[in-house]
Length: 320
View 1 (spheres, rainbow, N blue to C red):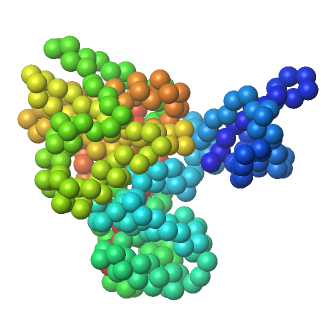
View 2: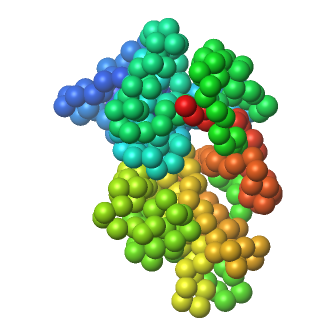
View 3: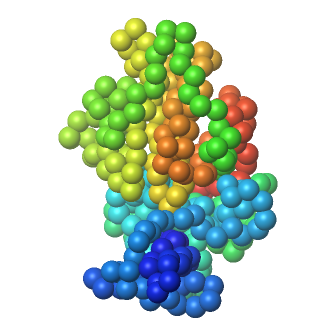
C-alpha cells in the first residue's frame, strides 16, 4: 500500500510518503521517490494509507491508472480464494459473480501467454469453475487489442458482459436528501437479516440465503471481507425498498450491490442511497469513489452521470 508516515525528528516532525515495503515490531520501511526510508516505530506520530500515485495530470479520481484502480477494486469485492501467477491474479468464489471468479491480468505472468492460460484453465478446472478472464482498457477497446485477448479468442472463448468503470470526486457528490416522509438511509457495519433478505430476493444466485447454499455463503464472505464496508438500506412504510453496499479500501470508496424494488424505481430511492454512501465516504476523508455498471444499463448510467461520475475505463470478460 501507499502510505504517509509522520515521525518525530530532532527539531520537530517530518513526513515520508511512498510505498510500504516492510514492517516489523521495531521499524517501518517506506520506499519514497528519494529512496528507502527506515523509520523507528517508536518515533511514529501518525500514519495513514493514501491513494496510488496519479498516472497523469487531473483530478485524483480520473488521474489514477487503470491498473492501479483495478487493483483497488479487487479489495472492494474480495474473492474467497486468490492466487498470483506473476502479474496475474486468479480469483475464485464458488462462481459468485465474474469479479470474484476471474483472472485479472495486471502484468506479466512470468511465462508465455499460452502457457499461462493453460495454468489458469487447470486452476479453475480443479475448482469446478468455468475459466474466465477479465480484460480492461480505455473506452472503446476490443478484446483482440492485446495478446491475451487474441490468445483467448483463438481458443474460442466467448465475450461476456461489457461494463464501464465510473469514478467521481466524493466532495462533489450530492449529500443525502431525505424523502418526503422524512426517511433516512440506514447504515450498518454488517448486513442485517432484512438487508440480506431484500438483496437476496432480487438476486437468484443467492436465494434462498441459507447455509446449504454455497453461493450464498460465498456472497457473504465476499461482501464482508473488505477492509471496511457499510450496508445501506432505505425503508418506506416498514418495508425495505432499496439497498446498497459501499466498501473502503486503499483510500477509495466503491459502490456495489445497489438494488431498488421495481415498483419504487424512478422515485429517487437510488439517488437517496447514493447520497448516504457519499456522506459516509466524506466522513472518512475518502476523496474518490468508483462503481461499475454494464454498458446496457442506460438508466443507471444516466443517474450516475447526473451525480458527477464519468467513465474511467472499460472491461469485459472472456469465458471458455
